[in-house]
Length: 495
Image (cartoon, rainbow, N blue to C red; front, side, top):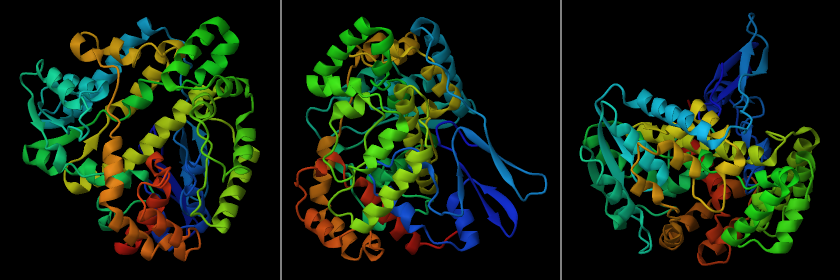
């Protein structure tokens, strides 16, 4: 039994009365066993972010998670099980010119699998390259397409203009433009979430935004909602590939890194230190365990390294810190990177992190009455993108060049020229202010505080000051995710 390479579909197993039982939900197995969530696992999930492999365990020690690249094989007698690898990422060696047709075919097949039955399907149409590509592919299918656009509140947001440009080439597609001011803000309805999920997810922060338009699309006849989610994770890739490219193609890599420095405002000293860092993954994890209370790492260290080093913040208790540090050190002793190349490791980790969020959003959407699908996270699509040479996949000079090349001839040239995406930072900042009362209530009788993992008073102090430095960097997300998850489990019957 196996899941998918993205982690969008996962597998778990546990021993139940001497029989090894597998399931697609960890909480189902935990409920049969009568287990409460493991407090140490909760402490680990307070890390921002929780790195591989700690992000991929189940919340119950007796329930074993199967990594996305592995399958569980249960013995004939049903009493034992072993894991075997079924998926390996392709080596990134294919030239863009050769890869583009394969990517186009993979995306065509992924969209066709969802649209070939006809009927009505809806698509996100933000005007970005990812959702625009999916929308044009869906328009070529037997299905009738309804395109959905949420304009941003920020006056500088250009999503609607780009979506309208795309609609000029889609005469058979119905376009629904929602009222920007009616769009839920980040942090909305956190107190009302009662989805039964098998792990905390930062997806709860945007749950109201993700689900708000689904009833309206279902009322227009949509049987399935297609998204462009995952495109950011496969059509673009980590700059960390240049750590290796500097050693194999130094002159080329230096020119590119100079461009990235200008693009991301990386300081020269920090860039040189990041490129000189040759620590293996296990050493990087162990070092991170010793600096959990340090300042957030600079973006250049994250961009050119093994990822963002995890941090804990002032509201996390010393006991939770001890548990998280112990877990990090235990993992560091045996952990290996997802790939020896830190660029491919980072890509895989980001794809899997995205998959775990969308896995929960998919459940929420189905419960709301309109299932979602994200073609960019299909196995064959991921493989087609990852096979491209990194020097052609990520460059400071062009935005998502691989997707643009693959969609040329399907998406009009005018729509392929977009070189940015909306950040929605205004919605997040407004959400902190608008939902301050909900955040205060969240920490008044905090489940995490009852377990001794967070300082409720410190969190209430922050909730009263939504403009506090650092809150705009999403540092509350992992803590809110764990709190909302515990509350949801207490609110609804277990499976």
